[in-house]
Image 1 (tube, rainbow, N blue to C red):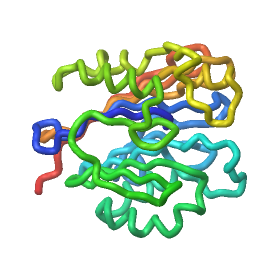
Image 2 (image 1 turned 120 degrees about the horizontal axis):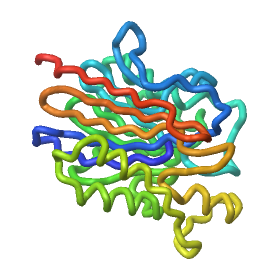
Image 3 (image 1 turned 90 degrees about the vertical axis):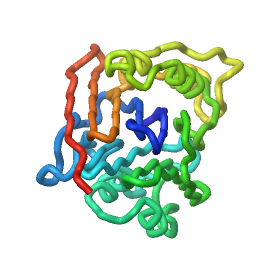
Image 4 (image 1 turned 60 degrees about the vertical axis):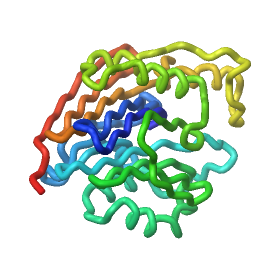
Length: 251
């Protein structure tokens, strides 16, 4: 996952609305959104690393992951970060306890950001500083830098989300993720890649022959349950749309 924005309103009828784009090479094998582990949680699957980038469990737990762009500190032998998502979803630890167990081992992985909802609290984690924190209510986001770092595409997406009503339909929200605006050079971050690549990656929705947005997701967690929609893409365009819903688990 490379871009996530959310509206966290824990005391409302819709505690969490989350929008996300996953960017990846088109040759990397991927299974679209589906139920895993005998129906315990739903997520897409990275068939190369075995894990996922975004998923939701039947009891309303959510995990989402972005990579931190740092080409000078990438290790080919590091374990897959996608397993951090699935381990949380198939477990029963609170978000705080899960991150407490993860913290001593965070440097084993290539740099990442992790967002976890355990049904009560929404927590963030930045592996580079091994820092966990409680996410405050409101509209926030993360891309391939620290949480709320104002990269142009994150600024555009969070601003667009702020203009939507809580009742916005999924198709409208999907359109926000389809923004392929390239940022001006003066606003581009400098992350150790070429200027041409910085330009390409500055759009919320990335298009190129070999690399681009592979999936756009909208997750609505409400008092009634969960709605999860995923639209998948290849280099030629839209492949399919998957939609799942489940009722809230009784307390």
